[in-house]
Length: 197
Length: 396
Image (cartoon, rainbow over all chains, first blue to last red; front, top):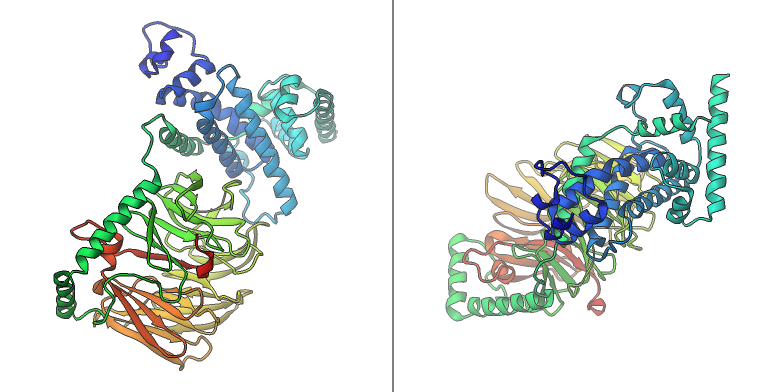
């Protein structure tokens, strides 16, 4: 990946078919982006958008808000690029912004006690990516948890963060993360058991 | 609890939205290209100084005897313009500061007529106390100090058509980007989409600190909402051709202006008054008088190619007062902060008219407006009045 230092898009390896090689690391893409490579930014966006949007959606339960939150996180990343420390991994940094903003948004909405007239309606079943009824039940149960518990579960089971990484991302003690994971899983299990009985 | 099942559910739990992804990518790319390493920009102060110097030269040329004679001849031939107009804006009648959107960008005009070019923006508006200017260009919304210092900026996917700062506290900003109404906090944080909106109608905050907003929704209805609670307070039937929404300064009534009708709603949405604009004319703009008793309306008669400014009393249809009439069309109206003067832009005459509406009516005209705000151009463009703000003492 030494050629990434040139900052040229073709040198990044994104489109290089001559040699089948590993995808460049986030650190390499960040370095290329800092050198002015549009392609590197596009590769970072392509790599992380779906997770960012999905995490925001699962916590906020609102498609428009998820779009805004994920978008804002990427804009914050782009603004921070020139001074971004390449020794730090990008993904936890980006997802930390997403998850914290999604929690803030959800708390603000509950404080506002929205009446829902302007809210994006729940997606009809036909538009869901999965028609698996158990998945739907699982997501319904997840939606009934508080945003803090949802966030911990999303970080752990969607984004595959370790409890230590979650603690760092949410600025929480490790024990709190573990207890939220446990309680979240218990609550989901209880809800699903009720549905089954 | 089956953790694998939870993982699967989460992976499939958010519907893919390619359109959202595309919108986000366009913004991210634009933001990246904006922030890419590049040669440092010339400071705004330098630009403003250069533009001011050019303006001084342009005004000097236009106020020479030959220039003055040509202006008078043009006005004489066209039959437009006040004959005793001042050749340049050397003071703002009524005081306060003006915000002017012109071809080179947005200008701030001080009470003594001194101008500062803020930057290459398409439109602008004042914050409640005139401490900041909200300016936009393309899809970027920017909060800038009247000195030109940028405080924050926000790139958006859609083209921004209008933006307004909430009155009193300035905690919220409503703006129309693309085909959506969006709301952002006054410090540039918390930007969120609110709903579909008509692009050509600026939203209007009720003049109190309750963050109540009127806007034209995607169906062409007037919708009034409590923005923080995202709660609809009321919604009108469809209003065809809606051109402007304006709350009365006391916040008790809402004016909806169309080319042919003035509709005045109560605070709770009842139609209090509805009247047609005079037969054969079309309303181009309207503004409440500062005492909320009357409405100044700019009307245009396309058949006669003339316009007039009248003061209407909403609840007394037979009471109206003609303030001014002249050939061509008039631009966007603005009241002075003290409520004594009404600024009427008059493109055909290349003049601004300051009409004294209170006791002792009169007209103060200023000529060569296009050249003063678009200096150095052979065919200068007439600017758009974007706002008139604040007591003189509050100036920077």
